[in-house]
Length: 378
Image (cartoon, rainbow, N blue to C red; front, top):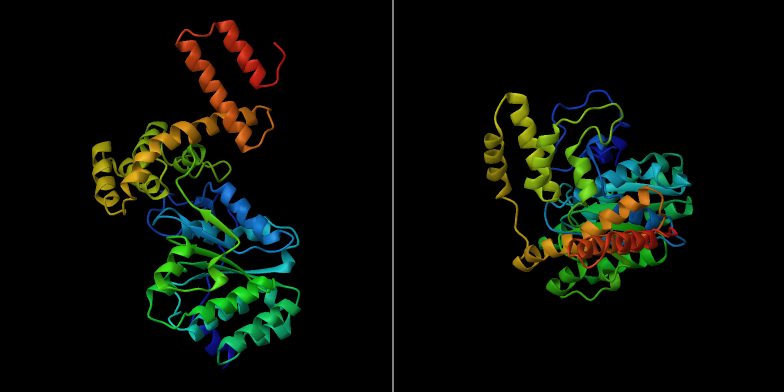
């Protein structure tokens, strides 16, 4: 197979250019599709840190990123692919590939190996290693050829990190992805020849049970559930592009930002949808009622989580997200504590204020309690 034939079947996605304050879209909100422009991606700092740490630890640890539909899995995985070189030291040790298994032709084991090899072969880190590059350009792909290619990449001192989006597509097809296929991937992972970052709708173990598979592949070293944005991250989203690009102005005014936050309820897709509708209304002279109709028409297409989860959202916000946000504010003004300490401080502040409003504590007692929380002598 020639190089031209090799590259014509599938063109791996290329990272977007570095962020600049120029050529910004008039409406910077992206609803319903993967975010390509890194200037339009906000938040998920904790998740990005986890991906980096699992990649650069003493031993790479594969992980499963999962969450409900349109919660932002594809955008997060693609953004990590775009930005990993700025997040890790000794970037020359890694070669990172993003591949959507919904987009690529991966309905057979051979097709899966070919798509992964194509993605690896196109990466700059491979180009300076002729043996590794040539091993990825074979014309026929089976399990042995794939293992041989990964071994050549490993011998070049490189760790392939495969960001496989929509990995659950493999379980939707009547294709021969059996225990032996998954056992082989697990063996490559255990030998630190390969790291996988897999995005799925449900945890991998659910698919194992549904398909009656027994491979130890499904006992991945780490799982990373993806949920709604934190209040701070939601605020960054509605302030785009000012929150990501220096000297840029927000596309929405303050009133529209607050409206988008109320409509979107920290759900990435709903926030993007609300902000986009308000932005369009602002640009075309329509009123907020028009924007609400546009938002409602699209929002009803979002699959709803189970009732039990919806009922738990207010309690989670009250008992976790809100106290953590208050604690994070304390961190920014000088108190250096970890996330759990931030939560404790936030709960302490809320408790002191509640007792004060109930008349159970005097102003002096409240100040004394707050001083104790911040480690300040009264």
